[in-house]
Image 1 (cartoon, rainbow, N blue to C red):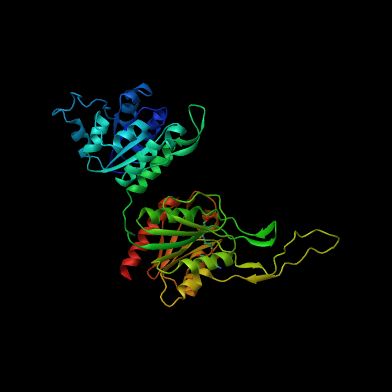
Image 2: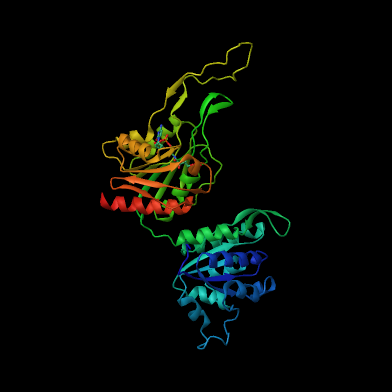
Length: 397
Ligand code: PMT
């Protein structure tokens, strides 16, 4: 229930993506939010108010002269209890009105009268999205502090393909939850590593592992949500960079080591989530190894990689260092021994069966006060708990 006790006004404007707003209401309500839907007249041509009333459990408003509001000031009455106003889908026409402060219907009047955050999820044809007028309007809205969610790129209802698709309801929900997170890392800088490393044997083969980067990317996202300036040094993964995070892509442990040392100055926190290969082939080959006629398989001589976290923790004035430990057994014993050998205040333990690859994880924090198991949860929820713990440790420093 990430949105328990939150009140949202959801504005729906005219566009085919209005049908997705119905699912969005369902998701917001499932997370505990009270949702008050306000529709423009155009939106009612795509989905009826009855659909939103059924899903939100509240009457829907479409008219600023609605007689159900006793003092006839619907724009004030409906917006005063709101923690945020979200418009999804937001048509090009709606964005133009908002950018110019027009107030010619209930929704746009509410936007002007609000005293809470405004988020918009644009949805329109790709030409409309790329029109200079829309680009100008978006720049104005951004400068006014409006949060723009998306849009995505892809197939459009008109049959064209390009930017302008509204984000999926799940993605919009994620953005809304992000914006409600406490800003306990405001003004802090956080550097982290994530994903696997890849140690080349020859041009097509290498040593790597099953890390997908999901845990590290979730922490990058949670730290950004909490107000930190985040730099993510990432091994090869198939994830997109969380919004607002600076990502530097690397491949091998040596590259990750060098990049972390280039970036570390000025950071308050270093979180090592990457599954770094402990060893690399001593002499990677320029040409592909051929099977040839030899009877014995070729031997690969290995050389130890530098310990990135250990080296950062050993700096004369290290940032707050947080490590991870993925173990197949004896989690507490091995995690705690890594924490001590690397001389770091906090290590996060997870079993390999829980941590690698999946959307969920089960973490235990190990620090000077002992061990603190966290309940199994999605990686982003655990990342937010970890970020809160990091903020508390920073306060004590
Ligand atoms: O990416 P996912 O699929 O979401 O999976 C997440 C994860 C399981 C990879 C992640 O939660 C995790 O546990 N990462 C650490 C993996 C591990 O066990 O690392 P390690 O025991 O080899 O190293 C201990 C710590 O030292 C880690 O913080 C590691 O980043 C760091 N280290 C290790 C070796 C090295 N050469 N340099 C390092 O910085």
